[in-house]
Amino acid sequence: MLSFLKSKPALKELLDGNFVDIHSHILPGIDDGAKNMTKSIELVSSLKSLGVSQIITSPHINHYVWNNSAEIIQSKLQDTQKVLEESKINIPLQAAAEYFIDSWFENHFKEEKLLTLKDNYVLVEMSYLNAPLNIYKTIFEIQVAGYIPVLAHPERYVFYHNKFSEYEKLKNAGCLFQLNLLSTVEYYGSQIAKTTDALLAKGMYDFCGTDVHHKKHIAAFEDKIKTKNIASLKEVIANNQFFKF
Image (cartoon, rainbow, N blue to C red; front, side):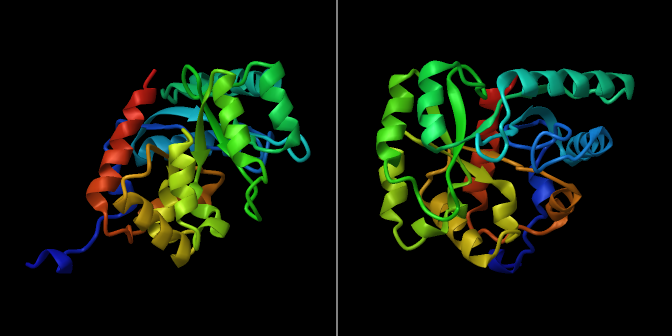
């Protein structure tokens, strides 16, 4: 059969049981993810069944919306680890954070140590409405402070879709890119999937994550991927082994 007639795999088929997830919201009652411990345990169990072997979860830290701290996150992590152990769900779990780039964050990383994915790799996000006016200055200052910025789901920032050169500028400025896996199945819409494909085609993604918040996200891993660049996608998934702990 001709290759273009072959059915594309479901997204879950690309996770081989050894995937290290670096972006999720599974700690209970801490942000817009799992609402309670029961939901947390359900999500962790589901991620394990999809082929996730280790989780570095990343609660939001957005001072004006989700005013979390390292202490709050670590406390919730310990509570969740304890319940997982009691439930005999064996999956390594650590916590970092997804930092929202705003004026508060620009001061915070200069004054306090950040929760990182590994070593000095820090997950950051920006508003879906528009990019920060001083984004390149902030990226530079993050690096001066000793961190490597990993930008969460760049394909979801629609204000860049017609300014693709901005993606290249971000990469050239030293910003790494983290793909949301559900972008490849059009979970967030066809335009975001199209941008995802373009970024994959140019080899611009460094890592990926599930960004799981709830069961609807889990269910979407049953969907077939829409991207043409399956080989590139597999490479990005494999790159997450860097975060194995």
